[in-house]
Image 1 (cartoon, one colour):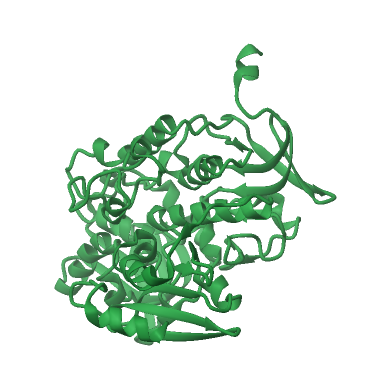
Image 2 (cartoon, rainbow, N blue to C red):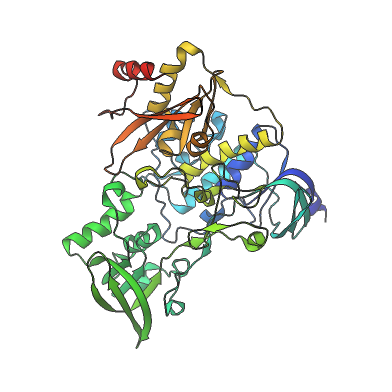
Length: 486
């Protein structure tokens, strides 16, 4: 009992409760505390790390970190080169992953990522009440009440940083006979076998990449083709390119565009029935193993009964641009569930919210928004009138938030000179007259360019500036053009 009493955040009343100690929960709690927002932070786990205590199954992340880069560690500029550390306001709280990497590869291993998150929590003193399991939720007046294994927490706002961690299988006939990605065995168990992987997204290609040295053949199947144009310029290219190259060169891996209709046990293996999509026609596969890399869903428990709507076949909460449930006020989501706020999706380019290097910025913006909803005055940068043009061009060239979350997060300068990072979709819907927003964007051909949005009397005018060979938007040409626009 003495040990229990010493744990932080006992049950009771708090303005905000954060649930989950993965990277989204750690970043949100840290940001709230730096803003002086009282809150409780609880987690069913025994230590920080969230999904990185278990996944990815083959122990190597997708997003990269460069231990040595053209910027000093612990600076805002270095965030460009470190896609895995969380964000800190002090140098000691930043870049916690690079010192733990053994440089065997340019992306960290799962244990290195877990250790980096634990280091952040330790150095920044981000406390959680561990071993406290959230069990149910109800409303009482304007408050939310979270029942946990330790007791009830009453709050005005709850931030669920639960991840997208519950295995989810597509409604395919016979899929109950095969394991999910989360149940994948050691790669040597697939030695000499023909393996069919259902799905051609991150986890599917992770399996293909990890199984290629062991399996006789790996077949990846899903209806949509892989968009190699966008993929070639993304941080996940390393995992995708080797299996795709193997497909093109006939090395044993096949990436098939097909709708999987049924899975049948056949002897010691399986028979897959599929229908081609980009190339119509019946396709049948006889394989030894099948793995369903069909994705995950957010573990919402009873939040749907509270009114939380979902998207993506019920897997992800539907969110406002500030990551609040679109249908259940006061319920917020952090971490990779923040992908439920789709943003503008210009040219079909999705946000980076499923990954740490995207949602870490979402969490910081969310914390500021929650603080303001609680009536706190949040300090903003101030920009003098004659400095607005060079300031915006500098942000377009160097701001890691804008480069990580293209067409999604924007640098906004209001008519009074106040400046902040904000969701572009929200600003476009509710612009302040006389304000300007800038974002880094990418078209469907992979070209990167600056976008300028100017609000005049409720009307938003969009101006796309030309790309630059070196992505340097601070030159005289850009200065003249932006000056004319403003």
